[in-house]
Length: 478
Ligand code: 4AD
Ligand code: MG
Image (tube, rainbow, N blue to C red; front, side):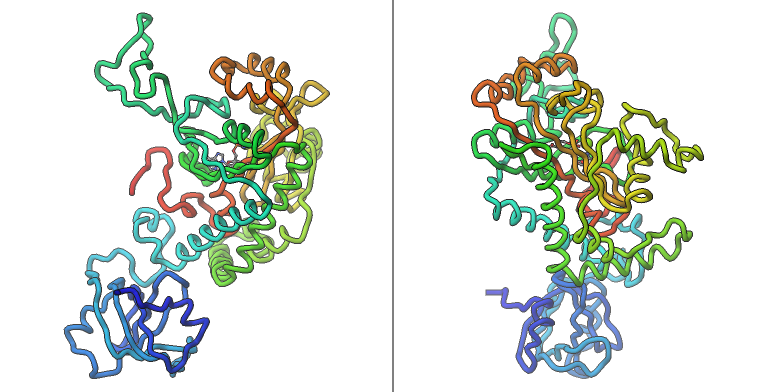
């Protein structure tokens, strides 16, 4: 058996002084032909491995270069040097994999995030990405724990679908039809009957519609999977492939939905604050350092940890869309013509408007409800005023929209009328409409953008830095 190693995180917390251990990892630095800083990805804290002078031959020592992979056996002893409590005094050393120092692109110095994006296959080996991806993992784990503890069923909805759940037409086509000699109908349109599935299909933009089928049988379900949007948005908040968590609950109205979403967000933040303290502290310090180079008015008013604690300990602000528009119209920013885009009832709020509400006006997460029907999806429940729907968006400081959700239209006649109005094909969604035909119930759900959540918790400014291998317009490397 090869794997009898102790993980560095474990070793540093358990402090097994005097014991013999085996550790394996990658070299971060090697100084004075004696001191190896070894990292195995379990923590940002490197283990100092001491190679007693004269114990290892020159040829071996030469091969200890940045990012070489080592197996070290030795004794855990109190550290002589400053900076760490423990170190391992090596008795045996194996070089598992050499690393050509001349060619290795990651030097032990600070690299820009832009540069690291170009070598995303190696960036996990930096402290920043170590912390980000351990936190990303913990958030995912906390999400499953939260729903499991509340009796929600994890439903796996399809990645390939024939429907456009959001009705926004931002889909990636899935096809095996040839580009040359594409089969055509008499009118010149593509004959999808010849395609793999015998119809036009695409990558899913949301698992919600199938989620509703689950909720109207199991009561409460959630999905957690990749979703795809072919929107040509080159921003720090948009990906073409992102992960979404979509709970869907029978017997819930809009308020129940908001309560769940707020409790959910607080739970997963709280989980990371307890279980990933070291990584959150590392990223908080990184952010504070990064912001030093910004002009004073661009810096955050509070640090990352204070921000997360604030969110944990305070209620989210809840306002209607109509109230939000009124606040914007009364704002000094509006009066001084600081907004680039128009403000009036009926607009789809732009990120400058959302940021004003969240960052300047309320200074906390805001849940905006009851949006105009015309700017929201067909499945949202029509309010009694006939012009707004029971929608809710959660806006987070520094991020903007992090959650989109609604109470669903459970009344068959109202739903089909809206579908017709919005050009959503009712015949193709016959199966969706069946939930309204056979035991329809009030129900609601929402979608949390996972990467935006990871951004919020890690303080990373660009969404490309919180997913391992980002897919964005004109970019699908790795
Ligand atoms: O607001 P959206 O489009 O809502 C839905 O898809 C609903 N079906 C959800 C539901 O009710 N079950 O997307 C939900 C969230 C957004 O609030 C945002 O956080 C994230 O998904 N999101 C994106 N994240 C990264 N890149 C993109 N291109 C995103 N588009 C949406
Ligand atoms: Mg939305």
